[in-house]
Image (cartoon, rainbow, N blue to C red; front, top):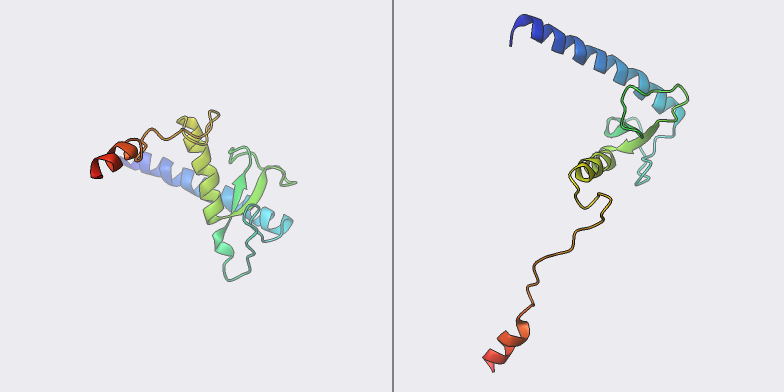
Amino acid sequence: MNAKEQEVILKARRQADERAKGYREQALKLYPWICGRCTREFNHSNLRELTVHHRDHDHDNNPADGSNWELLCLYCHDYEHQKLTEAAYGGSAGDTGAVGATYNPFADLKAKMQKKI
């Protein structure tokens, strides 16, 4: 990677950090320090584990009223993004619902039991 590419990447990371500071601080002032999914409560000692989730998954959509944000703990935030990833690949979180099991370990149980007798 050349110096110009490194400079562009560094600038993008700084901008992302500044953007994150801005909406995180705003969200922490607007909302109670509670995970919006599991209702875990946070205080100053564990506040780093409370994240800001963008409901529409657009990190540039940061209205001042906080309507695109919700506070989620690290675990619930990861789960929200995992659901989106699975849906994109047609997994169990997709529109088709859960995929049924294809293997039945008891399919020939009766036959096996009869052989033992």
